[in-house]
Length: 228
Length: 180
Image (cartoon, rainbow over all chains, first blue to last red):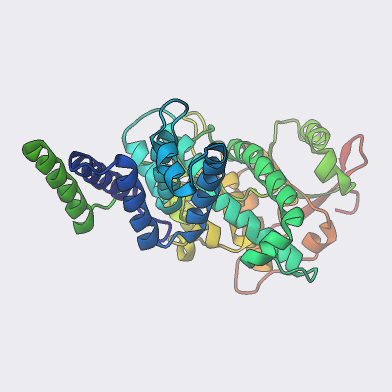
């Protein structure tokens, strides 16, 4: 699929992850270890490296804030911080942010919205699609800003170039995204549509990979239920 | 039903379109639906392909405002068949704008005011727009450079272009130009 995986595939992957997590927990492997291992594999499989860097930055900063005051060496401080339940747990952040960033980076927002639209939850499809398509909007606007800079002799398309020209593209990017959000509503009304419009529900394709993933998840849960 | 080209102060398109709409409505004696380009927005954003975009818009028309043409007739009339399965984001800027214009023209309105509608469109697309524009109600084009539209040559291979009548806007009233 050109734009990413379908919502059905995302649910299947999530089910497999939950299955792995409960079985691993029963074997004495902490849930945060299976979370990191599963999603590290998925990030590598789908090759969404930029989002992995985002995670490293988020948890690196969080780890620095929590780990710096600790007297132990780093190797001992990290598991302590991960297991610390006295304040907002890093594990909660891990379980929320890692899957969220992974699925945001690989799920096709259009297909997800179609799948959600089939559930007939009022407004949920368009809202999810608005959130999901922010990724597309950011990349589109960055592309436009890159070409505007390129005709002025400034190269910013590469990763290093982006960092060097951060002051040149951050403000227009934010302005463009805010403007886009406001104008999209006006545009829909100009075409005679309510905002958000009702999405047309189209069935998401379910193929052998999805069935295999659901079967794996079911097998893992069965194993956990019958064995432990 | 007629097609007009309105000459006005170019700044009106950006900064005085609400007042211009009132003046055009006063002159025509009816309400007008206004099309104008929005920065960064050239499609609804809720659909992936051209086929889905057209389907979404037709599906969401209000019950008391049914579209002038249903899917197949619309696609045929606006020459969109070759692009149906392309992603809207992969279309050129001109085609994206044309798609939005075609969907706007499919609303059942007695009169339309099109602001800066023809920029970024190829001559072929402008010809199609002109040929379809006057078929369902009065249309007023207000462009940054009206002589370009008035000087557009007809294509011998396609139907004749409609007669373009000229309007002037002096900032107070709209009136038909004497030479038209």
